[in-house]
Length: 229
Image 1 (cartoon, rainbow, N blue to C red):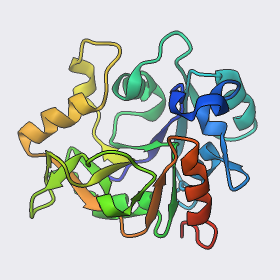
Image 2 (cartoon, rainbow, N blue to C red; image 1 turned 60 degrees about the horizontal axis):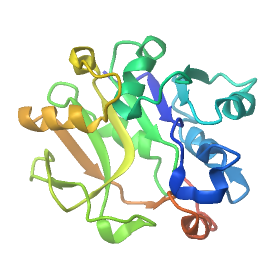
Image 3 (spheres, rainbow, N blue to C red; image 1 turned 120 degrees about the vertical axis):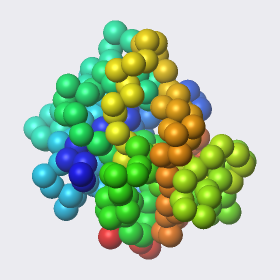
Image 4 (cartoon, helix red, strand yellow; image 1 turned 135 degrees about the vertical axis):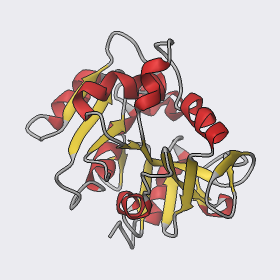
């Protein structure tokens, strides 16, 4: 079953952006004259019918105003910032019961559409999640040793290796059994690793993590001559 809904994560405080997020949410920080959130939502073009949901917390009113008049539905986390796992569960009434795309809003892409790649590789009969990964040497703007190692069949385990790009397809059935209100999707992924149902594919285009101010120039250089196709 191919996902017919996407949650774009846009609720975080963006503290690593420093002064840029003192008066605005990180998803509205501009890269090449366009808010990061708009770069993310543009990836859903051509994937209709797709229910588009964005979660909000930090400067939620600004995101709400920015998306006014669009078909994007907001999952309001004004009462509590729930992290990625809790945020996804909170948005489920808007997303529906099937597998969903999730996408971080603080990255830019140049090359093949990452959501289409995930959709083409998704195998619902053996996967509970399919993560799009970036090789460490190609992870522009990213700090860290990597997140996952892949077996020959594409199943994932923890360890220094490929970097999680922030794009995935995920089955949400496990969310109901988690008691915490605030939790990361890492909790689900670790359970799936134990069952051998967490998989990954590598992105062959270009990707930049826009998590800190100095990454903005890197991202603008990346998309200066190319965009997602």
